[in-house]
Amino acid sequence: MTIKVLVVDDSALIRQILSEIIKSEPDMTLVGAAPDAFVAKKLVLEKAPDVITLDIEMPKVDGLRFLEVLMNAKPTPVVMISTLTEKGADATLRSLELGAIDFVAKPKIGVAQGMADYHEMIVEKIRTAARSKVKKRNPTKSAAVKTVSYSGTEKVIAIGASTGGTEAIKEVLSTFPANAPATVITQHMPAGYTSTFAKRLDAVCQMQVKEAKGGERLLPGQAYLAPGDKHMEIERSGADYRIRLSDGPRVSGHKPSVDVLFTSLCRSAGSNAIGVLLTGMGSDGAMGLLELRNAGSETFCQDEASCIVFGMPKVAIEKGAAKSVVSLEDMGSVVMNAVEKLDAGSRL
Image 1 (cartoon, helix red, strand yellow):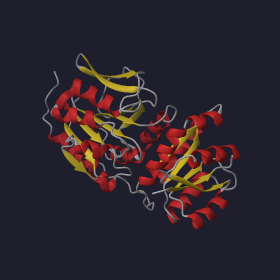
Image 2 (cartoon, rainbow, N blue to C red):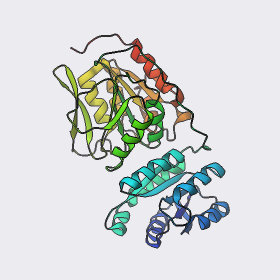
Image 3 (cartoon, one colour):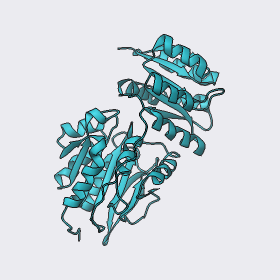
Image 4 (cartoon, helix red, strand yellow):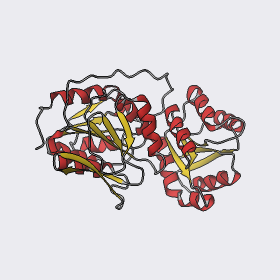
């Protein structure tokens, strides 16, 4: 099946580069290149694209407003084209809240060459978006927080996600109470975006959420997000668990890698860990989750019906890594139930 793609960008250069990339792919067809939201609206109605690449910063009507109207009127998979700045990161995360599937960050310098170098990444994101599930946006409901009687430092929750994961992580984490076990998170995201993502999570969660810096002692009530350009591992340090950041090669195609996080937690915490694998393309996290299950950990995968992209959880389920397959809506309460069922125990 040929993927019909519409490019929306006020930069003639970016429109040309993206158009050439799309035309070079045998499974894609360029149905239009719009310089603004008004032309884009007309082309959406005439061409019914399967995927739209959308610039955030446009004159007249910006990308976020166009996206909001699109998702209410004619939900369509969208890949945002954003700028790698703090303001751009915040707008990008807002676009994911509004229903965009993924994003591509424009290079700060050498935009033309940089975008051309991103050829494979761009077409992969377009293909993923074409296979994703887009639903009409509904008003956000306040998450019900599951209280727990648990107290201690021996348990650790680990969450991994990719495409569609920013909203999935927010939905799960916002149900955790302030005294939840220390939680470590790896979300596939470029450097420059994770600090903003952590701040946005912190604003809506009872737990304190921060981007990991390395060396932190894991504490209850704290959630730590892997930075976008480092692997995050959990190590034993005497009676503590501590975070170690490393700048090694990509693992399972990614840095940060969910497999790296899960495998390290398997070594350091064993059955005191709880592993959660959410929506995402590819297979990162599947092997690590299997190692956690084999070590006696509780392991959960998001179900197909609630995933934006049923890739990583699907592979993990097929490998037998998931003890339970759970809807996104129920994941937070199910994980907290698992926390209460675990023995008080000790890792010492």
